[in-house]
Image (tube, rainbow, N blue to C red; front, top):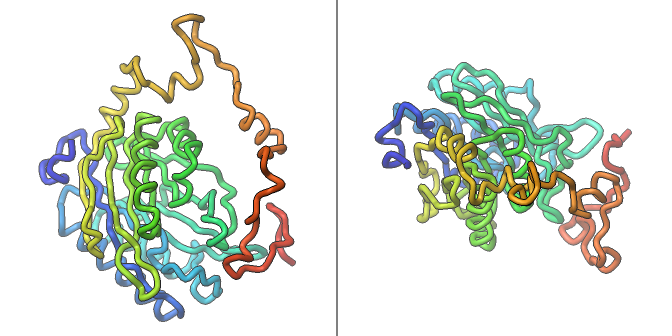
Length: 334
């Protein structure tokens, strides 16, 4: 399926490279500029690595590191020099690129934002992380849903970020909107290794969808990221995996969205993305298409509440040194 990591390309395959980027330390504007230059070097490396590679993917925190620093000097903007440089790297190397920025948000906390540019520098996907990794991350929760874009060779691509992938609803939403390949970028460290692997596989299998997933790698002197670039096929099996954790290694595979389409149309047993909304179609015409899930109806009505909610001990970021927020979602600071 992987075509020996993309070395043997198929006319139907999409070649993807997952960069296990060395975890950086970025404290100043100068260090941010230097890190952007390093990412650009690795875009060029990806192109030299394989002429048939269609898309190169960089992890969450590629420009920022894991400090959780919200210093405005190292925040990016869509019209700023960092984004312009990343866009130009895709043009110069004739390759699609998926990148991570911490985006300035006037009136609120910064957004953790993912971008996909095509090989001509066109912005194809813009995503703000929906589920920051609380209580550790200070980022504003995303407000734009889960977009899906047209990708290389007619594929459909979604992007989620790190902790997003621990919520099965995120992958289901991506698939429901038509994604055949779901990218998951992350800054996870070693304690999350097993959960990372099995959620990447379950997200793929439960939605008949390919998942392409990558973390930062190496150490910044405080944190140790794990790399763990991995591709999962739509049946949940692992196509290719980076097990060494070597910084800046590019894990490659050729994936087949055409076979995803075939499975979604032809599978009866375990066609879960269809069967979820057509329960028991053997017994009743078309299956039951109601919503029997209390958590869904409660969430939609704004009354989501767990039976043990009053006993939950950590409900803000004070345990990680952040002040208790006073602003409600959707409000802006003066």
